[in-house]
Image 1: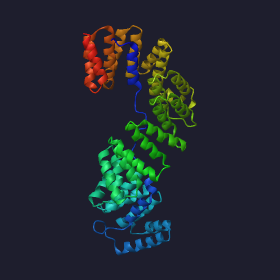
Image 2: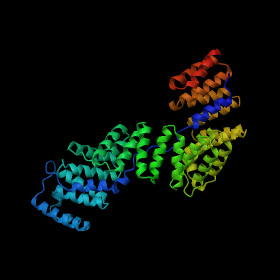
Image 3: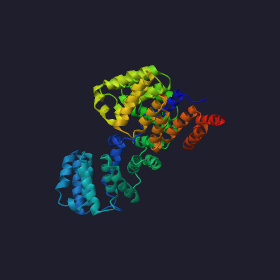
Image 4: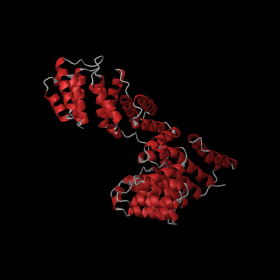
Length: 457
C-alpha cells in the first residue's frame, strides 16, 4: 500500500508542469473594424448635427460646412480640412471642431482628432457624437479606460447605434467584464448586423464566460463566410479544446498550418494536443519546427514543450528538445534570465534523474535555490531528491519552506503525506492528506487513497 518514490515523483510532475497550453483568450482585435464598410457608414453619418441635443449651427458655421461638403463631394479631403482649419470660427465652434476632428481621424491623425473632439466637448459638454468619436479615437490608441466614460455618456445622451455599443463591448472585454461585453456586442448587432467584429466579440465573450459550445457555433457561422481566416480557425480550436474535443481542435490547427498561417507559438500548442492524444512523433515534429524556425517560438513556449514532454515521461524526446533550446542562439539571451533558467534547470534535473544521475540533478536544483532561495518549485523538487537519498527530514524541511507560499500548499501537503505513508506514520499522513482534500474537494482519486491509508491505522 505504501506509496513509492515513483508515485511521489509522478505527483510532482503533474504539479510542476501541467497547464493549459492553447493560447489564452485575448480581447477581440479591433483593427479590422476601421476597414469595414459598416464602420465607414456609421462614422461618416456623424457629420450631421442633431439639433435636439447637440450644438446649434449658426449661419456662418453652416456656410463653412457647406463649403467643406463641396470639397468632400469632389473627393478633396485635404482641401476640406484646410477650409476648416483656416476658418476664424474654428476655435469657438463645437460643430467645426467636430467636423475637422472627423476628417483628421479618417486621415489617420489620431492625436489631432482627439484634441479636436476634446475641445468641442469643452465648449459643449453634451455633444453626444463628439463623446462617441472621441472614445473611438481613444480605442484606436488602445486607451480603452479613457474611452469608457465617453461611450457611457454618449449612451446616456441617447446613442443606440451599433458602433457605440460595439465599442463599449470591446472596452468591457478589455476590462475583463465578460457578461457586460456579451450584452453590448449583442445589442450592437441589432443595428450593425453586417459588422463581423461584433459577432466575433460575442463569441470571445462567450468563451470568457465558459460557454465554449455557443462560441464554437458562432465561430463556425463566421467561417462559412470567411473560410481563409486563420485567426477564427484558431479561435474555434480554443473552443473545441474547452469542450474536450481535441480531434476537432487538431483538425482546425492542422488546416491553419496547411494555409501556412500557423505561427511557431501555436505550432507548439498543436504539439501539446498531439501529445495528449498519444501521438508523440507528431508532437515532436511540431516542437522541433517551432523551435528551429527562422523566428522561433518564444522561449516560454519552448520551455512549455520541454516540460510537457517530461510530464508525459517522453525522456528521449525531452532530451532532444532540451538540446535544441540550449543550442539556440535565439534563446541564449532570454535563457540567462532567472525565471527562464530555473524552468530549464528544473526540467534538466528531472532528465538527470531519469539517467540515474540523481546527484547531478540535485546539484542543478541547488543552483536554482542559490539564485532564488524562495523558488518553491525548486524546494519541492529538491525535497524529493533528498527523500530519494534517504535524507527524509531534510526533505520535509524543504517542503515546509515551500508550503509558506499558499499556491503550493496543496501539493506540498500531498507529497509530505505520501512520505509519511512510506514511513508508516499513517495517522499523521491522514491528517495532512485530509487538509489537501479541504483544498481540493473534487479529487476523487485522493479521497480513495486517504480512505485506504486510514484503513491501515
